[in-house]
Length: 261
Image 1 (spheres, one colour):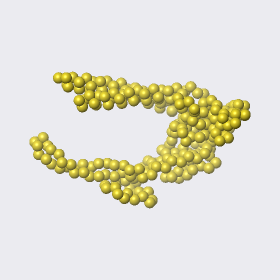
Image 2: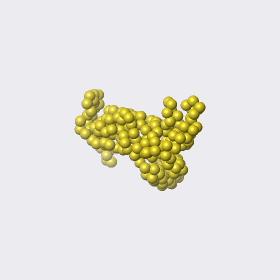
Image 3: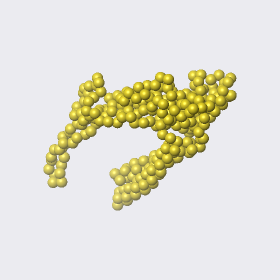
Image 4: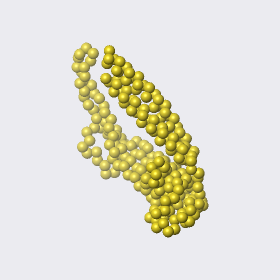
């Protein structure tokens, strides 16, 4: 019966990988389909069509490339970098010791120590700054709070000391350290943006598309890197789906055969 259950689980994972493959291929096609526009052209279309719509203008999907520009950039929490976005985390890692009683092949009982590793999130802070994308022809506001964000990891290190003010009270175990992680989108940095041009709060902006199958991306990676990453992910998902699907079927057949015997 155990083999059948494992087989079912593997097939379920294979199905999930297959759907991930479809999603990644769709993402790659979405990015490839759109031509990079000039901000000035997007603004011109808005000026021609947006008048009289009383703030309800929803334009086309636009692909843009330019520099992030913020009049009020943030200072990132861990590295103090000038950014338009950051996510800063601190994770407490600790160990607990458990004495377990087991039986050997001869029926004798013995005790052994088992170390369990644990993680606790101490802090997880995310902040956005209003910013424009400037491609030299003009600039346009980007509302990226609902976007797929491809960031830069500015910090990922292990430190023995906890953040100021943190007390691991009530945790039974031995602290091994604290992992400090920070992901950022810097100010004045080259970005790739794919989203819908629309009026938002009286301003033209790139926002999350109204259609669910359209992508909304704000990325520190180039268009080429995004396409290659999505296609590679789709390829690996295909290989994984085929491999796990076949293995799952074999285990199910063996399990049912053994049960029948």
